[in-house]
Every structure is written in structure tokens, then in C-alpha cells.
Length: 199
Image 1 (cartoon, rainbow, N blue to C red):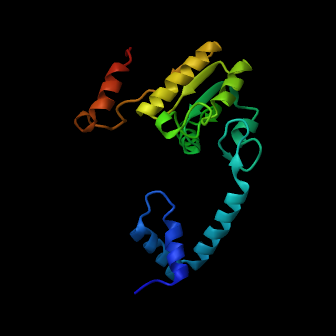
Image 2: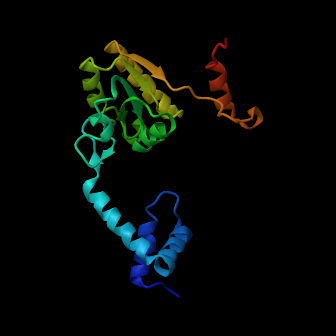
Image 3: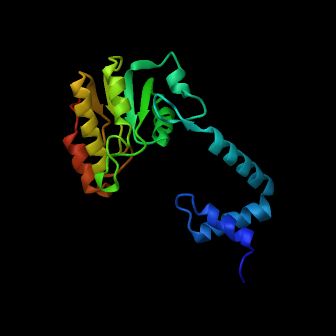
């Protein structure tokens, strides 16, 4: 039996979400139609509003409804500290975990020449302009611990050095509560080489 054309469109539309395959999309569609039409209506309304009104902060490039996001507009933030992350989700993760007191700069990805993503696509010209202003004293590189993330961090640290800005990198290693026998070799090697003196 084939679905109605509109139901098929709904299932297909839900597949745009990350990690959602045909079966998951079908389950979601049936759940919304059979058990939560009110929730589905609210979802569609909020989704439409978000798509029309959420853009990017003109200073840090994170998602924002305003010209400047709440972080950049907050006069209490330490403007000498700038944390560079790959995505707006990273901003949220850091804020929830540590309540970072400085400002952010969101790359919207990482350097990947094979995919056509170079410094211009990451807005590194905007980042360089901020470094030139002299307000930033330390740049914290919080890109992901992947080959591309490391390459991106290295590129930015060299750029920061040209303007006398100190660059630091987030420590990567064994998670709290992790057991050595279950940690992959790359993570162990990174943690071992980045060990710190105690006492």
C-alpha cells in the first residue's frame, strides 16, 4: 500500500534531519499525525519563524535573531579573551559546561581544501580584522580534535602570532570517568604527550 502524496512528502521532509533515515522519518510522521497534532502544529510554526528570523551575529557569526548576539552585546564579557569554535552548537556546549566569560568566534566548519573550504569560507578575514584591532589578548582554539580541526587550529595560531596574540589550545585526552583500556590509541597518545606536572 502506498502512502498519500502529502504523507510521503512529510516523511521525505523529515529525512533532512541528521541521523533520520526512512524508517525513523516514517515513525515521526505517524507519531505527529496520530498522537500529537498540536505539537506538530507548534513545531511547524516555530520552524517557520526560526527560518525567517534567525541569522548570524555580525561579530562572532553564531546564530542570532539580532545584529549582535547576546554574548557580543553583553558589556560584562571579557573582550580580551576570544574562543574560536567550529559551530554554534559548540558555543552552547561551552556555555553550559563552563560559562565562558569571554567572547566567541564561530568558524562554521574547519579547513578542508578537498571540500573547497578554505580560510575565506571560514570567515578568517573577519577573525584577522578582530585581531588587528588589538583588543584580543588571548585566543583559545576550541576546534574539534580531528585532523581538520588540528590543521585549522594551527593555521589560526600562526595568524594570532602575527598580531602578538597568545594562542592556546583546549586540552584533549581521557574523559573524566574513562578507563584506559577502552580509550582509543590516538586519544591516549594525545593525552600522554599533553600530560601536566602535578604538585
